[in-house]
Amino acid sequence: MINVALMLAGKGTRMNLDIPKQFIEVNKKEIFEYALSTFDNNPSIDKIFLVINKEDFIHVKTIIERNTYKHPIEFVFGGASRQESVFNALNRMSELGVNLGDKVLIHDACRPLLTDKLINKIIQTLKSEVACVPALKMTDSICLSNNADYIDKNEDRSKFFALQTPQGFDFNFIFKAHCNARNSELNYFTDDTSLVIINGGEVKLIEGEKFNFKITTFDDLFMFKNLVRG
Image: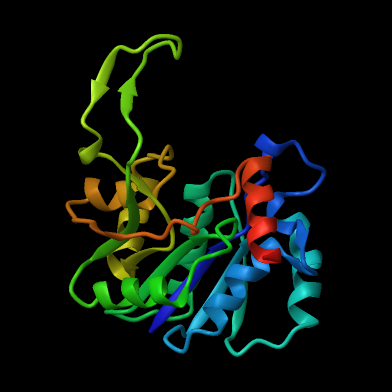
């Protein structure tokens, strides 16, 4: 069984908008609906969990109810951090009886242009790996700077990758990793692959996709609108 945790609980404070950016409407669809539709149309997916803020529940529920989806959709309330929000989703999956060998894909709702090809590649990789993440090689020169004004050190860009989502995991491994972090009061992780690594697991890098970018700034939103509108 393959479950999806679609993360909608972000506040999007960097864009300073009246609404979270995942709810911005583009071509009569809100941004989160693009990724949701892609997962829903993939026959390998079994169930989709929407991780939302409590105050957004009515809004999201209304959108879900006015559409027809192939997959069952479950609502999960997010927490104070992304790490807590992911834990809440995994914990709900556990309560519903996710079994040994099941997989989970965790995806940012503000990466609306993921493809079936990428989803299938992740699912295929999880047949032999405990975790995998799509990533892009860095093409720009890379440097380190302590004060953001001057270069301290130039780095070899061939060693650096930009991580994307969806990130795929063996459910039992990532859930135990989250439980261990929670029990140890380690709550500073912003990426689930870090939890895999500190628990002794390996994370397989697979080739990401250029247009699977995250909408974080107005420039990103502008580019997304133009891509969708052709």
